Image 1: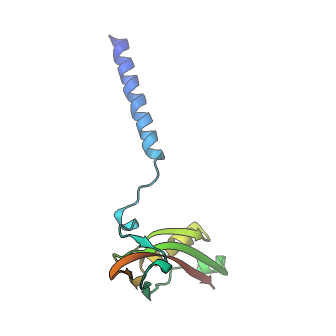
Image 2 (image 1 turned 180 degrees about the horizontal axis):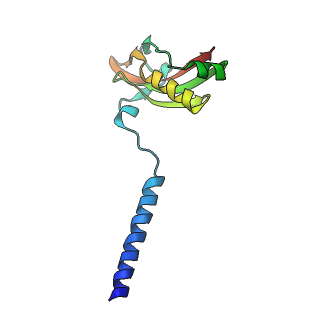
Image 3 (image 1 turned 60 degrees about the vertical axis):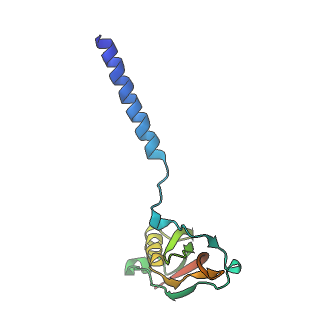
Amino acid sequence: MNITLIRAAAFLLVTVLVSSLAMAQQPNQSTDDDRCAVQVFKGNEVDQKLKILAKPEPDYTKADRRKFSYGVVVLRAVFCGSGKVTDIKVKSGLSDDLNAKTIEAARRIQFVPAKKDGKEVSQVLIVEYHVNR
């Protein structure tokens, strides 16, 4: 009876370990705020392109600026018809820290969404942020 109990406990332990490893290897799931649910178009596919009202600067520190005397972070983002900047990907960047600060600034961009057939739609746009001393 003890052997059966030990085998059952070992089986349970292996099952839990395999399950936790499989869960740990799954890619991070995006939150609803990170994804746009409104149909996305390219600039040449919309009737009226989006209009940027305010483009906040990233909160780069003096140390960041000294480290990179000049550089550019290029982002690809969806300017969602809902009014949020989503689906942000770094096309070319600098350090992970600067890229993260740049993405945070891009999320705060204020804009008027693009329009197609009189409805607000989403538009893909490339956004550049320059790091200068």
